[in-house]
Length: 384
Image 1 (cartoon, rainbow, N blue to C red):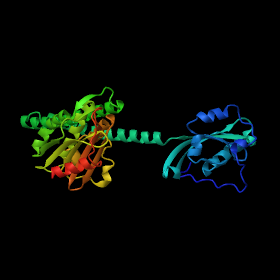
Image 2: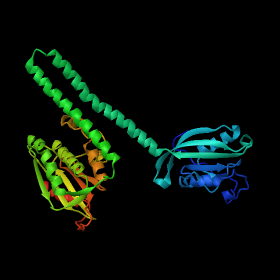
Image 3: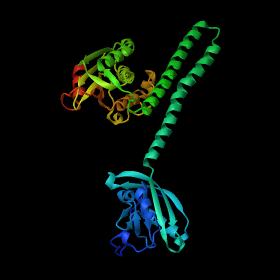
Image 4: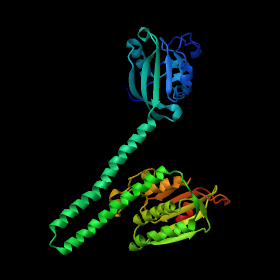
């Protein structure tokens, strides 16, 4: 069936004022069935009048009064009425009442009761497939991406192994290529580790057994895990904390999320710059953890996608720095698992600021600190 289905014009003849008042004998129990259906369902008589319709059918605009409003569906109904054969198809409907969002439906039209070939009743069912299609697209993208990500280090390992075999009588070459093999193996290990962690987080949202967590400890541990990478590039890690903030959750997950943000900041910052991590009490009972850098920034067109799995603003640079493409996806899901959200401010050439906003531990009264962007602003000022 076609895309962006057109609405059927109303017949010139006036429709009866109430579809439920048509004197047509319906199968017993049809009203009870329609009342519990989550899908769009419409029962039409021999004159294409709507006798019954489900709430979903009316909400999506399939039905107005006693008229079926989608031209392609009306044509399908008439085909079924002519020959009595069940028909199936798909239709994409752009609905103004849902901000013009296109909704995909799987459609099935069938005779209802006896005598359809002579002009009897027809049942139309339309199931919203939009979310299942989106999930399927995500699954396909994930399979394609993970295949590509695994192919690179595995292929490199195979090539290096062949090279080592050829250079078996050259100890220096063997040592050099063995080092490269360790790097690729480490990259593969990191990728598998991140995949397992992301899967575990997504399966356990929200955190199943939250415990009190001191954010000072989270910041100190994350900084400690990143110091070696930062030092290698001459990048100074600075902490500016409002001490004593506490949240409920999983400490290891929060450390991992903050470490990912810090490593991302280090990887995308010029040498001999600064990366600042700040903690502060935010608005509405939240604790804010911000990571600000003086890096290359993120193009505005990419900001909405940076938390997708395997999405990279600069694929070549990301692979050169050893990134798996899963770090920010992990940050997003860890934050969500703790009932919080992550926001980002960025300007090309000026740097980026990522802010985690987490609910404070119950019993800690919130203190007003301005707008949602206060943490980003203060972090930007401190890192300059």
